[in-house]
Length: 379
Image 1 (cartoon, helix red, strand yellow):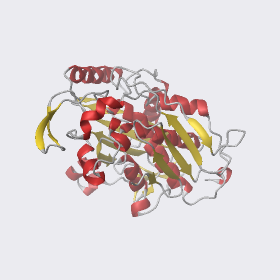
Image 2: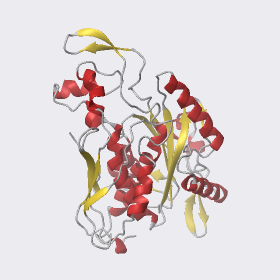
Image 3: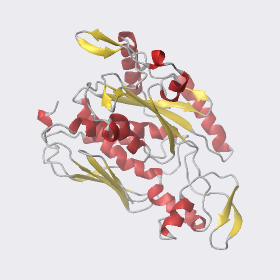
Image 4: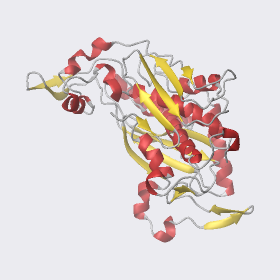
């Protein structure tokens, strides 16, 4: 079971949804970088379950216990950083039936076919979105290191069902759009912690209402999360598989429920001509700058100085209370399943900090790839 990703910065995620603890090990962090644990706690709270009406009722504090990797001053010391999050609110009995009747749309059947009953079933085991918490630990630390180098990252719920938020102003790449994008990112960063994570408050109200409607029906709904990074200089990344987009994609597709990913103009490029899709260059304040950003901040796997922009589509939560057709793996007969337990009616709102974490870990990995092993010497 591959649970490690990254090249220069390597992250290993471990644990299961109902195991005693979940956590991560981060290798390759430069020494001498301060880690603000209060800021990390605040970041983790945005993903934590049980915080609002549109998430699972399961309540977990997601308190992070860093057990190695820091010196007495709270700085990275060059050793691997290990962090634990204890699971404190599990109800494994809710999942007893799923050992024999797999959930449609979930990994239950595929896992059983691979591990023949030895897999950990409660809460989805290693397949659970609970495992995005340790990813957020790594991402929260990466955000702090990137922020000290002028890289800013923000995400929002771009769509739930048919309801849409206003997009990030990251495709025009003019001076005016850059100022507007910075304003959008500041607004998200300073929003109330309990607010729906959208740029438009009205769009957030509509999305929350849509989620509540499907929740009352025992159903779930999908969505899209849009994530942007600014301040990344041109020249970061590598061709092909270790490029900006490839590094991001590997992490994003390890997030449960993600079914689609696009960068910049994304799939709409299929409707464009080359003369429309190409991003012309101009000199701006003595630097070469793309005049638009259909590329999403990367050319040939290497950053071009424009904002890095991606959108990830998340499917509706498979665990729903409505009757679904399944099978009884023990009896070898058809069966009907009504899922018990506590589940998000829509994963998109809590996936917002997860998208930011994925972007942060990927960009930090790319930035560290060609530098020394002392943070003060970097870039």
